[in-house]
Length: 109
Image 1 (cartoon, rainbow, N blue to C red):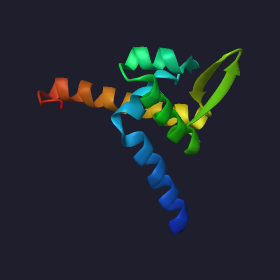
Image 2 (image 1 turned 90 degrees about the vertical axis):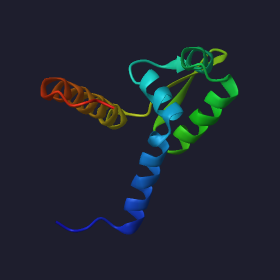
Image 3 (image 1 turned 135 degrees about the vertical axis):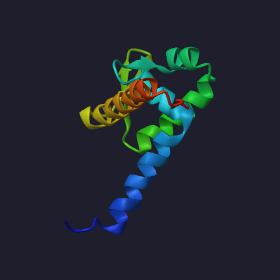
């Protein structure tokens, strides 16, 4: 197997860095099943609308979310199925870890 080019590795690291911020990850998880407007994202996450907009701008630049205009509102959704799969797989992975931890008696952080 050939190593990945350095520029591709750097771009991938940037995407994971975007997803590594807790607030941005909460936004991604919130829009993974259906498009939502900024106001709803802000209310649900407890973040200010301006902070949500800032995070969405970064997530759009990273091609993790897309915007859809519906009348006067803009709704945000995951950009594609690849992003959804990554998020779903990681959520499943963490759920597995919790189940294994519960059965083995080790603490879950």
